[in-house]
Image (cartoon, rainbow over the protein chains, first blue to last red):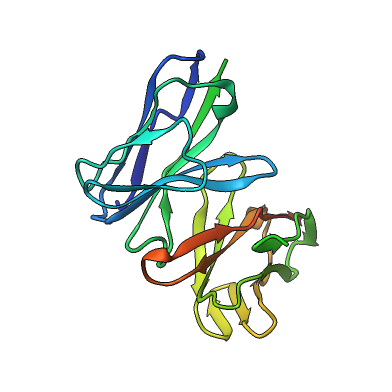
Length: 113
Length: 113
């Protein structure tokens, strides 16, 4: 089944404790992206990747890192999480920058206390 | 003016009726338009995309695009309670490597049995 697998689904952590949210897709998509979704602000792009070793900032990259060492994986790293990073996070992949539509992962609800 | 605007709703329709969801956008150069459905707490799911002026039909769903008036609509015929969700409009701006997907905040739809 074609899918984007994101883990964990729920995460509660403390301020400053480094964490990684994993994302993997099995559709051989070149384009992958991370979004956060907050009430009243909608979906906002954090980082995206056009291909292996090619990543770029989205609209809200501060406090986040990403890497793309393999085509299928695109982890999101929070080096020092803060409470304002409490949000619902989605990984998504697409054939071409979302031009043919995204396939989204099931989401990670992160709470930073 | 926001780049992609949607009425937040909630839009309430009786079961079996036609639900009409609207989205306006500000960039006249926009080429690609997408409708996603998002159930509460779940990830967005692509329903339809449309590139050309006019209508595009897929089952009970019809997307309507009017580039001159800068709006795109989604019609849901024979609405079912399972259609109750938030519907996100996304518009692709720019060209080539400068393409970017801009999201609306979504319209909440409630279909009443």
